[in-house]
Length: 337
DNA sequence: TCTGGGGTCCTAGGACCC
DNA sequence: TCTGGGGTCCTAGGACCC
Image (cartoon, rainbow, N blue to C red; front, side, top):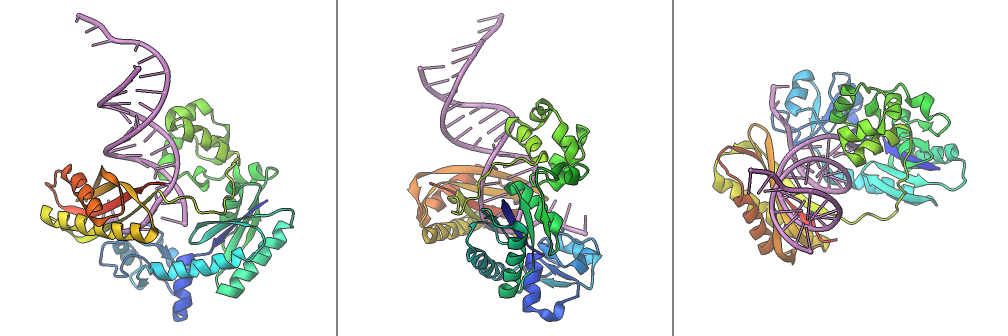
């Protein structure tokens, strides 16, 4: 039996802990906190969601739809700190814990009454961090994760092979994690809109449209099947980088080059801090209005040295024709692992 | 009304080798 | 004038997740 613990409105909840006077108000967290700048909504409070505000929406749009909302800057260190507290509480239980993100984790039980454990977990997290969470119970990670979404906010929900079909069949296909807007659209073109339809679809048709792996995997998740293990250790980091969207497009190629150099130096620093070596560097350029391209350059030798990273980044940059204004520059190191 | 930042994984196509 | 088949590796792009 697997539990999926998912914090409710995590980012907004952390902000409201720091500013209790904002409880009950329309709060929107994202970007610099200034809705006249480039950025998107990370999380909106329930009060703001009623105005159609949701994650990913441009801040400018959110300000239009909800002019009297309170806008707060995205505060990564605060969320990381809150997350660590929550995970420490979960680690205190005697079960295998997989941290799956800032605000979610899996617990693998062995024989204990899962509903009772779920309630214990909720009580412990709330008592020690002040944060509310939802808990899904399943026979695998997929079922548990889907169940926790159904349990929101603050509830407990159990899915298993006996009720998967009755609970899920009629729900839209994108209820399943792994199906986003594009796959939902492609499925709709095949006449598949709900989970039941996907479960009954022909594997051949799905593989033809989505490729061999994704095609058969989609059909599996629609049937509630998932064999991925709960893994307590963090998987090795594969890449590490930074990207910046500029408030004003960079029109000058020299400015772009300077930014690539700056970002490469930051990435080198981060590599050294993490004790990792890069084997190649990817430079990403997003041209105005919104066209993104990337080029990769291999390092002469595995390294975390600033000079090596910078040289490779500039080599990659040379492959771009910088003949248009640039709105984003990114540098990412691919690691040796 | 313009569209963040940090990641992972998969796919398609081309180069190359035997 | 027309050009196999099997395999690997690399690159670029895309979809998704939080």
